[in-house]
Length: 251
Image (cartoon, rainbow, N blue to C red; front, side):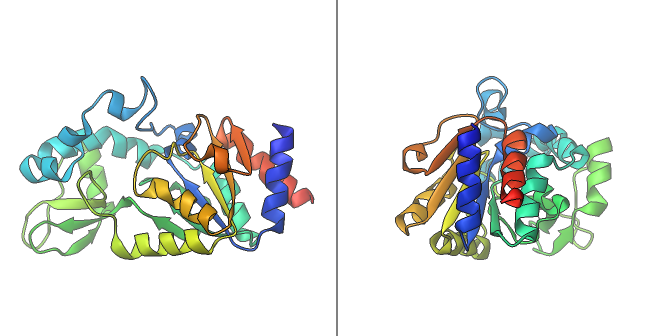
């Protein structure tokens, strides 16, 4: 492990354009469940097409909101962990140029990262399904979590849809294009806490590698691209990333 941490630190030091791609595994140490781990992952207990798809929201939005409620409560209560702070520190020292995240929890923002691309959206804003006006979610979260109150548009009174990407839904166009450009432009990509099983985001590391970027993978489990990576570190990202940052700062 120490050899891998040293190698990762050296690659970060020698790179000019580092991109971090983070998945649910970076937020599990903050108490937010991931989706695909056997037994504990949300999709081992729920059918995503019934509770987290665009069709489900269209036909039974209350069911989707009821399913989302405990997850949103955890997100609201969660705090950034050492992995989030490590990524933010690498950005602040000029090493990381862009953070691409699959997560909807905004913990990268709260840890201090500024250049964050949320390719799956977040619960920060909502859009009316009728008049399409966008609303900040802050005013709606507390009554939703505490009383189960479904957020409604203040103008037309129709339901507000959280601006997070459901199954069957397209990724936000501009954000996705920026993520693709970052993957093609970087000379090092760090994949952290992602199983790389969700497309199209799973293809970003391959784009980076095909454009001659180096690759570091930090994850509990194997990923499809491990064999193409320059360094693979298996373990808790909240332990590994801070060690890498310490090594980078010592060099």
